[in-house]
Amino acid sequence: MIVNDRITEYIKSLEPQESPLIYEIGKEARENGVPVIREETAAFLKTMTAAMKPKAILEVGTAVGYSTLLMAEIMGPDCQITTIEKYEKRIPIASQNFEKAGKTDCITLLEGDAGEILKGLTGPFDLVFMDAAKGQYLAWLPQILKVMRVGGMLISDNVLQDGDIIESRYAVERRNRTIHGRMREYLYELKHSDKLMTTIVPIGDGMTVSIRI
Image (cartoon, rainbow, N blue to C red; front, side, top):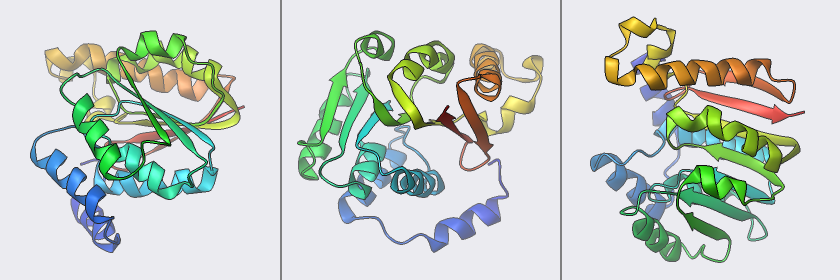
């Protein structure tokens, strides 16, 4: 945990119950090791979505559709969500969850590699949520910027890597060093880009909120 565990548990204890379906999707995913956003992160994402009032959302990394449905629940039926997932085993589960929630009219699930799919999107998107392969965030950023409108928001999850981001490269496990280095580059780019205004939020596993300027 990046934030004190007791504080995190207290924050989570204040959260009202999600809808039964979304709660079960999140609970089952966490029990089975599916990488969905943490509960405190979910509350933050919902709040940012409500603040933006987006008409078009792009999500990179669907998993089983948990975060997709969190955003869909906040927004009205006129909001369209485009979500991208590469892992074949999770795609039918996400599709089933969208059907159960009655959200198939407002959610478009694109199957395949995000790097390739992003090249074919035109946008503009009001809100982009990145929660996929962490080592690819930097590679995807140029295309993300092309499809975001000015004033749009980019939210990136898992940017602090359970606190490992502050460690030197050699203090990180060898298998994580490439991702560690790329995430550091990504954070530097977000903070120094003349196209973005970014803040880093130490909630969950770390998030960034960037506004396209």
